[in-house]
Amino acid sequence: MIELLGVSGTLLLLFAGFGVLIGLLFGFFGMGGSFLVTPALMVMGYETDVAVASGLAFVFATSVIATLKHRDLGQIDYKLGVLMIAGTTAGIEVGKMGLHRLQAMGLADTVVSVIYVALLGGIGVFITYTAVKGDGGGGISHNADADPDADDIPDIAKTIQSYSLPPMITIRGGVSVSLWMILLVAFATGLLSGFLGVGGGFIRMPALFYLIGVPVPIAVGTDLFEIVFSGGIGSFLYAMDGAVDLSIVVPLLAGSAGGARLGAAATSLVDEDEIKVYFGVMLLLGAVAVAIRKIGEFSDIPVLQTVSLVVIIGAAALVAGAVVLSSVKALRTEPAPATSTAD
Amino acid sequence: MFGIEDPTAIVDALQVIGIVLLEAILLYVGYGLLEWVLGPTLVDALRGEQ
Image 1 (cartoon, helix red, strand yellow):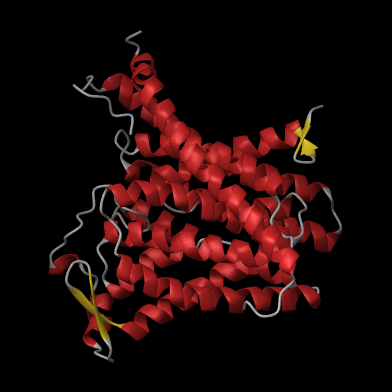
Image 2 (spheres, rainbow over the protein chains, first blue to last red):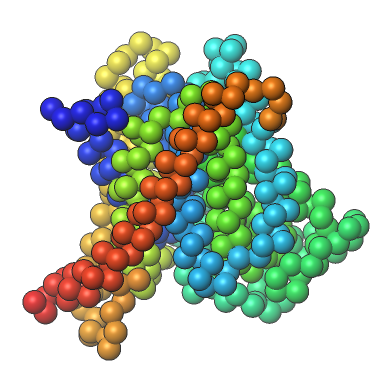
């Protein structure tokens, strides 16, 4: 079998295929794709720091590509982005130190796995609940307005904006908010990035909207811009320890960049709410997969590792398949437009 | 954060990040071109018009 980057062609193809799934989900939902990478790598038996570092490097590269698109759409608040970078950088460093300390104590894998199960499960329950309830929460609206009226700002954001702890910063959309609140949100999400190897978008984007009141499209674009730097810095710090594995990142990215284009194209064809319930279930299955793996380790039942891997990849494939099938069905039933919808 | 570090480790780390960044930009341009060239044909094929 052909070997590239020191690993077999089969493994490279597996990563590229998994990347297509991740990219499809990221391109369609705008969140959640990278959240599956680190647990999947851990399930495959990679060391925790390699899984976290490679996941972070993958997030960095994916956000570079997505930011280039959002820049063209004028959906980035650079001032807010720079402030977020400052807070996140400190958070990443603290998170990384915490991970290394836990690793020295032999607890890193267990603690990271437990946090993953709690976060994946919690967000999965929230998204499934809101999708079944049908109020449109738990994800990114594809048709969000960049300049919302006051009614669009969540009540909690209005409360936070009412605390005028100086200095106050004016962000896009004319919203004025305390610098300290921005730094606090940035630090907390940076902590997660450094500790879990995730971009933090799944928590930072809702935090920007719900806690600070940034319009959704600006929150998405600014979040991605910020991830370029936080992901880049985080990857660099881990790369100095030799933890970033290019044989993982290169094929994953090659697949995901293509998948993200397909996912983005699908947003103009498929109603997100139709698919959201699958997405919530996928996150829940991700939590189940990590839990199965830990049980397998504690009980010394090696076959549970394989079961866990099948569950996590199967869950991603299920949702990606639902997106593709719904898109093809929509293409076949809708009349052809005057111009192509392939972006 | 950036205290007294091994210069070789810094160079190696910059190399790794550079490779990832270069791949991302190449993929952005490459897939963009591919979509521009093949996108309409693929959409027509999926619509069953070819």
